View 1: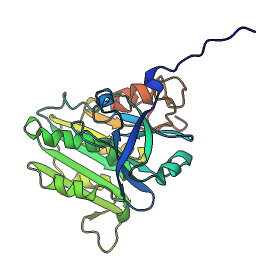
View 2: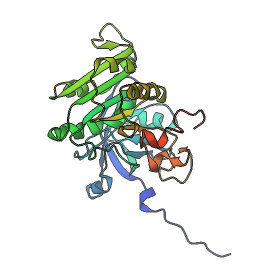
View 3: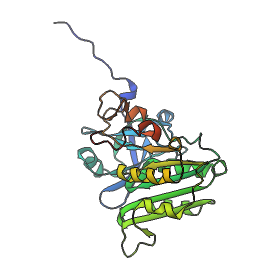
View 4: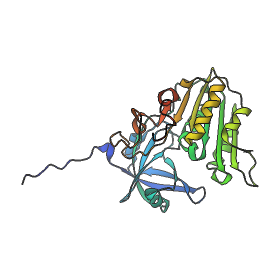
Length: 284
């Protein structure tokens, strides 16, 4: 019998050990994990653009694609995770000091360099703020390079609002508007009530100099796009963060295919003009 050579996986497919240095919980099903690579010399390989994602690996169980929600200039990598499946339920039990695996970053990021000296309109819903959090922090660290920043964020229930302290800090930034809304506000809620698309009536949009960054439930983005078109914002100024079932992160498995594109390697950030034909189509 002929012995077969053992194939070593390429380094891009091998998870790098990272320790959980902090865990913050936003209710029982949403946690933000700050991760630090055990090998500090590996950190440059994880330099990322806001909007990219890592594969977070729970040893012996599996891995999930999670957006990086920290600022690119920080040493630690933050990932905000909603507990929804087998792998995330295992991650749910982990605490500071436990070790997970990371590989990445994957995909492409928000067009921040191309957006310099323009106004930014950020529209998010639910946990959708996580993919754009790093982008917002990036902008405020370079505040003089951007125009007016408008952040519209909606949640279903008031208890679903995560990163509340960040929203409050962003509100204090110059030349910035932050509006929050909840479909189901509670007695402690002090912001707007209703769906996030209703907030468009409260903000001014200079269609000729505005770039839109949007993420969240696709039904929310669908109606937001209608509002933006009604305000004259061209499709090539609207960028979406899309989610699909990303298993390999390198376009091999086909789970995240969207028409001719793969969300993991051609996204997850897409210009609306590129995915409009397939966006919102049942089954895609």
